[in-house]
Image (cartoon, rainbow, N blue to C red; front, top):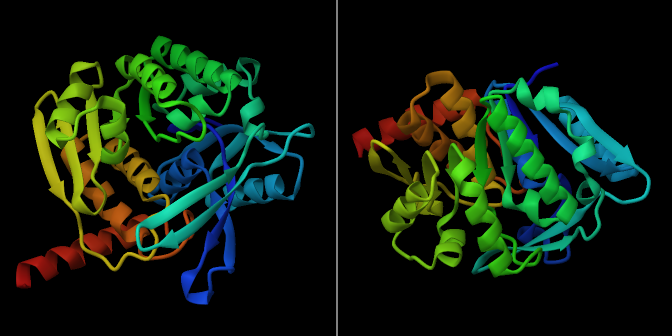
Length: 314
């Protein structure tokens, strides 16, 4: 079965601290950036699939069950017995949320180009992956390079999140790899925090301009609570953030990516897609965890309408 958007990378089990229940209480859920993106896409009404490996273990089974429930095509996810499904912890304090990973030599990191379903990628409208997909192992990076080649040869649009995890690789290696990837990218989804480290620039407009000049066709620079800066060949537009009572911002950037891609397939309008994704990402921060708070399209539409009415009457 074909999917409109094919996501390539690692899925993880999430253990998220719930501060109101004490620092030692962790809630078990799911994560992994590309998996979050795929679920966000599915909840917006577009078809998504994932390419990955999971362990032949309880956590791997739980992820397969999750994708089945969410309507994410997992026909190209295989279970392997020689490695485990990765996990991570999320803790919270006054400075925000913090990640601790236990993913070294995870099942997903064992993927090789031989695992790639070429025809499946070639039939998609988008291929989505992140820098994490490149960083978890050299063989996974080889898989990303092979998938880029398939996408380019078959006019499949490429979506890329620069998701920077310096516990996985050095800043120099990340800069080199990401710089080499950007010229192939149609839709680039960096965060301001990552981009300051990757580019050495601090001003958001300069960062967007830098990425465009380096080959990205569209750049949506995620500014957290401040919104997003959208850059295309037609210019740069700032979309302000939407004020919500944030409980946990884990995965908000992933939800932005998925909502943007789904909305763009619907309307082919970058500005409207960024506005929609901005609302979806804000709405996702109201609850705890990466997956449970991901809003459905109906929720996002209602939020946009109610927020617009609130602004107009205030």
